[in-house]
Length: 321
Length: 249
Ligand SMILES: Nc1ncnc2c1ncn2[C@@H]1O[C@H](COP(=O)(O)OP(=O)(O)OP(=O)(O)O)[C@@H](O)[C@H]1O
Ligand SMILES: [Mg+2]
Image (cartoon, rainbow over all chains, first blue to last red; front, side):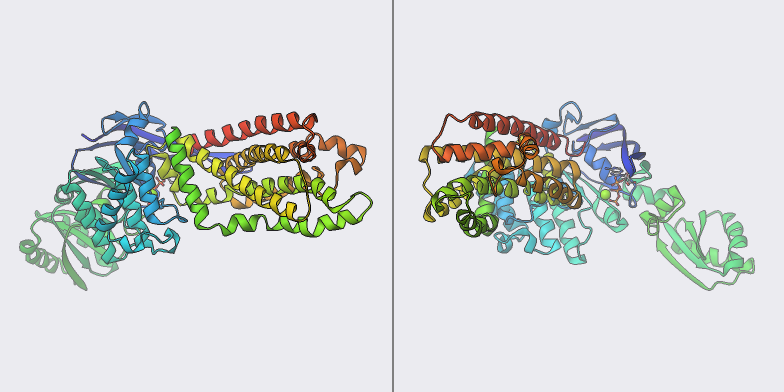
């Protein structure tokens, strides 16, 4: 295990103005186990506690309670040792805006213990790997968001950390750059680096990670591989639009069908979770017809992590806040 | 630890060298004082010759650079907190105090260079001062830089807000400057102002500067200025370093 965290909690005391303070329970008891060599995602909506969790694991803030062993060292007792073994790219990126990226990479390499010469070689390697050579000598503030993000990654990787933390690495990137970043993260796994990333994109967690936890309001609500989590709620989902008045009878009727795992209403539509959708769709249609319920529209899709989220929290991640 | 401090110092110095316009711009206002105000004072009954006036006036102008230049270094740091740069440094293997120490040393070096430029200009305008005195004054400048930039980084890390910070500095900077006797010697001031001025470390630094430029090393203001500046400098530096240590506590 490269990360083993138990009962992590963080309560902030926030100022409310006029000297008043407020207790914010950002993380309310999170357990995490990440195996070495995995890409592990922490998925959750805004304010779920993702950043706070990753900050505790990266030794930036001490947990209010709970323990975490990261890369073999305790984050509260031995933060220095943890820092030698991690790379960390925060949500805001964290590159010095005024200097050229090359300088930032070299500084990070030398802080990590390399000689001037080694640092220069290493920076060339990274600049090439992230296609940044042509921007290397311009002040970072003159670069685009995607280019800055790549510098942030390069700086985080400079000392070849066995564990890499990425807080919302693809927020603000276009699809092209997002796909590139996914490739880069996969390449890291290939080299044996473990990655813990946070995201609020379902597709990202689904496409990229080996395992994930879903967190909401500071608590883990589900944990597993993307496939396992989706299988838990049945493999397929039929989305039905029947008209307002028909939703209730349809829910009762369909829940009784043997191949239906769960039925949920979302706005005007019904989401019906079924096993083996291709085979059971005709059965479902017949059942509705027999009940005298007219269909306005219907579609069959694979269940997504959003359905997992919906199942565990009663809300959809797409409109959760 | 020392290595990390030197690495940060080198990095920051390269950054300053890449954009030397700003430190140069920073001495523009003091230089204007020198060019426009010194001749004015020289013409009044207070001043004697131009050279005498400049010898009286230049130490004050130097303290003005020290104050205005170094007090504002913290502004950049607020942005570095916001864009996560300091956060990243804090979880890197860097020795945390080095992050502040490297910058403070850069600020002190820049200040000494600015001071040299201003003294050179005053020299060209006719000032003659004791050379060892000028050297000691440069050391005092560095110490004042330590005090001011320590204070500035401390404020930046504590407030994390440009607005709040500029309000506080506006509030302190003007009285500090007026009560140093930069413009005119405090001996011309009413008694109560002179009393208040004694609580201003910059006042003693300017007094010490004047004695040093006159080549008078026996004046009591010199040890007093060094003692005060270094003690306060140590205090502000400790404050900013410890704020850095608990950056995201
Ligand atoms: N320094 C702080 N002081 C007070 N409250 C905080 C602080 N940091 C975070 N919080 C609160 O803790 C909760 C969790 O915040 P966190 O930044 O961990 O969320 P997140 O999951 O990363 O969200 P996002 O997707 O928006 O980045 C939020 O309600 C936030 O307001
Ligand atoms: Mg976040």
